[in-house]
Length: 309
Length: 268
Image (cartoon, rainbow over all chains, first blue to last red; front, side, top):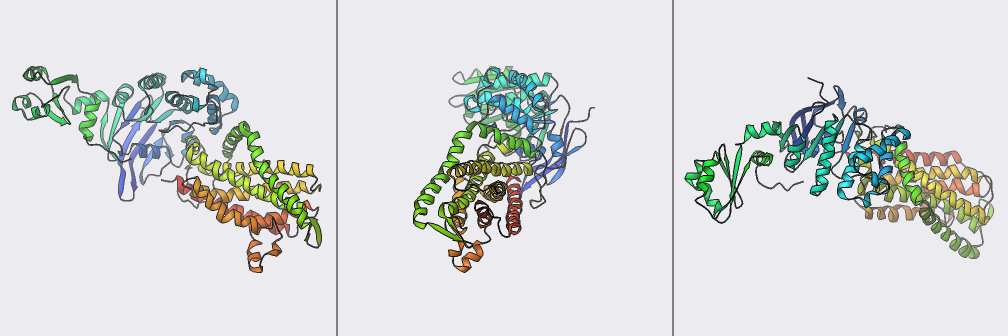
């Protein structure tokens, strides 16, 4: 096994009496894309901030590249990290090119080296035609891609992305995914937090599910689904659908039944007999599909809304 | 070492990484230099003309240390210190706050290997540099108006850079404490405006009641005026070393407090 790029051990962070990160351990191997998912307030951003040395853990250790410690060796570690924060911090007064130049200087890179990298990075971000445009003239997706290009200016060994596609429209999101997949193919390693299960499923080789500061599951997306869920789901909705959850004949055909709002979810290993039985309610609408990460996420973290930051 | 000190009062940890941050501000400013310079020098010059020539014709000459000087010279030598103070203060309050809080430029910078201490140092030096730029332009106009032609003005120039440094350090304290731009009004109305009237810019400090005068003598702006005004009159300042030390103490102490409060702001 290779030396992990990042290993986090028994990380704890408290704010007053609240423990926001509780005994969190994980690691990232070279070439991996690790996704951190969890509801609002699960501790994703706090964990990431600690990994970036912006917040001091109460206990636990964060080691990079086989020995450098955060926060003691923050500057040496940062020299090899690429970070895309949740909120864009692009300089509004600079063009796309200048944004890359100025950011490269923070790493102590000579101007000649940075200028050589800029055209390639803009091309990678599909922004070559916007080299002279300021962030205010760019769309949301373009800004995110410029932030990604900026994070690559120092040719980092590990990328840390905090919700890289939040707020983007589907086209912009797909283009972002494409670029991230390209980076993974080139052998880059990525840690990303996300709210989107399709994003996690598409990009991540391994997932970490956090809830209330704790790690509640870890594994590849397929393994996690196989481990925690029945393979098929039949959703039933329409007038009177909720009552079906109490129907003894149907209950026998599903391993697990969940009700959310006006919809009943039947989780099953084999849906054929269940779908047959549902013919008796022709007025109701059904949706038959394989179970996915979203189901897993909701099973593990519950369906209640988390509205605190 | 860590980018943000855990003990907020720990000694500043400074390195040359402040330079790319300073360069960044310089690059932005270059794009807006002309309008910004016009704004920065137009107002002080209006004061100078209105009060210097207008009020000066009523006041005539002012007696200063046994020497009679024209009011315009008296006012010019004081108001240039005020310009250094104002230019540094505006930059270290409004502009630094925009970068720190509104645009989150500092957060972006700290995703690169740059320590918060170096960012604060860069902002401090940048504000001082910008104030020196304003001061230089105003000095040029004063020379053109023939207010003073002393070659000792060459010494006034670095002194005014020191004044810029002191006031940018002080302003950064309030930058670190601010929740929004409105907060800065307190600093102006409670500190800078009274100081402007107590520091002997518009009238000599010996007009003040003795007890007020005793305090006013130690204000950083008074000290700046005591250093700069004699140079305009082609004389060397009395007790120059003491004055320079007072400015330096204000600068160092203010920078340390500003740094501690900024670390506290960024620590979470």
